[in-house]
Image (cartoon, rainbow, N blue to C red):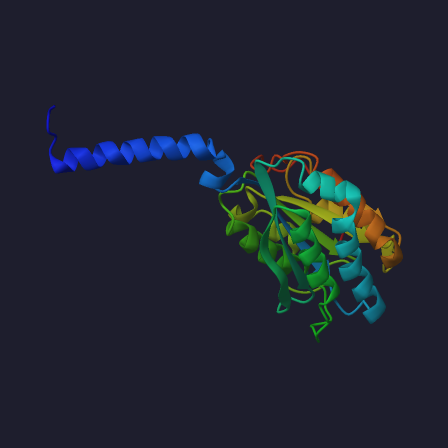
Amino acid sequence: MPVFPAKKRMKTVGAVFLACLATLVGPVPAQSLAQTQCRQALALGLDVSGSVDEREYRLQLDGLAAALESASVVGKLLELPNTHIEISVFEWSGPNHQRLVLDWTPVTSAAVITRVADRLRSTARIPADPSTGLGRAMVFGGVLLAKRPDCWSHSLDLSGDGRSNSGPRPQDVRSQDLFENVVVNALVVGDTDGGRDLKPYFEAVVLNGIGSFAIQAASFDAFEQAMTKKLLRELQGLMVSHAKPRPQPPVPNQ
């Protein structure tokens, strides 16, 4: 019988052991070998400017929590098990106030969604600049999304009940390179601001990217329903964030 060197005998024994182990445990799922890929990064910005009172503040936070937990949205969030969506949530008002409520969170299970909803419901309001800095809110959201370069698409979802009145203008911010790969959508609360139509304003100066859209809620009481509708539309497929923005209508006077 041939005698093999000790080093070769060890390799042979190791190979036999691994073969036996594979027979016992079966194939290792690919999911356990590598993390799932991020198919979409979604940043949600909530308006906490001076026009939003305490009750309306809670309707936003609790409304977003309920929308995320709705059966239809949960189904969309979890429908592709080999990929996932990551979300973050922040508050915004004037140019110097943006607060991160929820840092980037991979939504990989119903339990994660429950934890996110609990976090939103437990968040208390803090004093903030009462002005409305839409442009600065867009920049904050764009910087957040830039931290998720490996996600296939990037969406910024801004809720607001008024026109920008402080800080950089949103239409100027939108042209920055930061938004070349970002789709910006809006949830507009209310019909008018100072007697002027609000939804056309958001459509003209905030929306960005092919497929971007604005949904309107008549008041904060309708926020949950509007947010659910908007999330379902945002999550139905990949947005073309890398494309140039569609031609925009004339910008209403700020």
